[in-house]
Image (tube, rainbow, N blue to C red; front, side, top):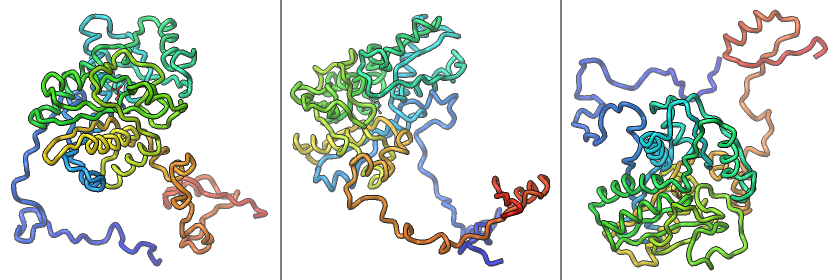
Length: 401
Ligand SMILES: Cc1ncc(COP(=O)(O)O)c(C=O)c1O
């Protein structure tokens, strides 16, 4: 039978390797490989939290006409996929240390997702031996002080579940301390203490507060830029927040209250991003830099590029931008052209409906004739056919067609 495949996946190999064979034609790199700085074997995934890489941004920087080094800290490379692994680990360690959290207890946390994943990851590995994670969904548009908000539901659950604890990322001092002790140290070390600007979004504000406290101590001239989103009230001066919008799509940044751990006195300049700009820049980071980040990373990067220009950062100066999480959480959202169009973030000219195949008929496709069975065929025969063909479904045609 004629194959539909131009190149069969089981065609003879073109690889010339033979065990102990002639190496003159060998395709493998026989030179010494650059040694990885990471250790070889880790005792568990918690040892992989932190020490995330700083990666130079190239095309976006060039397109924006920015002169300085823009360095993205890829927090999505934490094992749980976000910056929140850091605080998950630290908040649990401290709660265990002070004796408030014991094996068998329940942890409740209001979270958009990443902190929940971070906590679940730590519990899965840690001595607490988690029995599993349960998700209680709450409406995203509930105000923080309404009874159906994530925070109110967490408090409600705490009254119902014995031996339960809310680690409370909004008030827990070990949220910013985790960043003071790790994220900021890693940045200082990677840049040899030479950092002109740090840009981070604010959700709870733990990242921004922890980073600014350490950097203001060790690198006093470093400019701290906070990123908020339109629809949120975290930025200063207050006038920046009074625009009559309360809803936004970008997740992880912004709130309708000022979290206790957010110390706004250390932020030199706030920038506000819009959904349109944030999502556009996340897609650019993915497409032009291969950085598979989430929506708030686009907000941070867009504001960072603007801030580099506003503060006239020059060649050799370092601007570090925190990219908090990965696109994994948003596959059906801003990664999808259809979603972007439906939500008004793509214009009519980018409408994802003008595909060449949309007007073609099914008969123009090279599809094999379907295999069907009659209702009288034995179950065993049908299973034999399905097994042989690799089908998981087969149409059954009745006697009258
Ligand atoms: C997805 C996501 N997670 C976490 C953070 C950091 O938040 P926090 O201010 O709570 O440290 C951000 C901030 O940009 C974020 O976008």
